[in-house]
Amino acid sequence: MKDTQIQKLIKAEAKRQKNVINLIASENYVSKDVLTALGSELTNKYAEGYPGRRYYGGNEIVDKVELLCISRALKLFKLKPTEWHVNAQLLSGSPANFALYSALVPIGGKIMGMKLSSGGHLTHGHPLSMTGKLWKPIQFELDSQREIIDYDALLKIAIKEKPDMIVAGFTAYPRIVDFKKFRKIADACGALLHVDMAHFSGLVAGGQYPSPFPYADTVMTTTHKSLRGPRQALVFVRKDAREFDKKLDKMVIPGLFGGPHENNIAAVAVALKEADSPVFKKYAKQVIQNAKTLAKELQKRGWRIISGGTDSHLILVDTWMQGAGVSGKEASIRLEKAGIIVNMNTIPGDTRSVMDPSGIRLGTCAETTRGKKEKDMLKIAEKIDTALRAKK
Image (cartoon, rainbow, N blue to C red; front, top):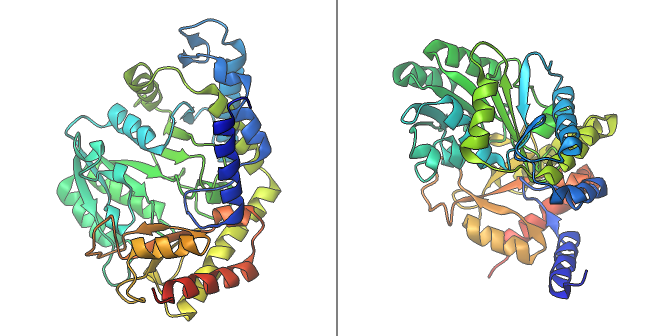
């Protein structure tokens, strides 16, 4: 690379990644093949529109790339192309959710989702998000005692509020979501059911987490977390008389976006093929085994794990209320000094600021990619405990 400044920074970041324990739940390490696709000549092509319907010429090859990505997405999640439509042009999870809501929920309509402090995402109707400004948010919280979803309480809220769309999914909820119960709740109030599986799509692909597709009307996933691909998103919608496919595609282009990033789409296609393998299924299983081991070991050392454990790749740890009196921000700083990267996170019932909350979020996808197993989680738990209990 002729630009030595950028080259130096890239090398420094590669070294940083290599020398830390990465427990960021929303990060992973892609393969060399994914990196090759990202840095390919596909970067050069402007492809506004859809395969066979572009506004520019010279797209016969990128059309094949995009269609291959779509077909691999359907195959990986065992979906029939006659029943499901995929839009592969979304750049990340937040704009993907925004595009879907814009297509299917009238402005001012109601969107019901998990509250941020309970483990939901900003785009599930948080007041600071545009999804909480353009649509009326109906936010639900976890059962305060068990720290899990109370489906009976959700049903009551849904029947009372009659939302246009219910969002099932999370960014910091460690337990399995019961999509069948969410379907019944949506049917009871006449709402669409949207599943945000950005965090656990790789676990679904690996057969280690229930698939939302039998119950959902629409599904969104990012591709850079447990799916181990580039930073991109996929949106799946059912094909039926409601014409969700046409509404979504029209909202993406020309409604919200211009030319898609075909190099990213190619990299997603690579990752989808990698995920459709026995090796990836073993990986997904190990991710959860590692998370359960790490959670149990931290519990043994006196740390309160939110909801008492995990069913996925994700762990929430209370470092303040019943821990060592270390705020989430301070915990993150201490751990980074010890070579462990996490993120501060609110926990259910949190009374502290989101910028300095009561807990931290851990995830095992990235370190499992690097070959870590249960015995390694025991050592990591010890390092976490030592760093958090150390005196300033």
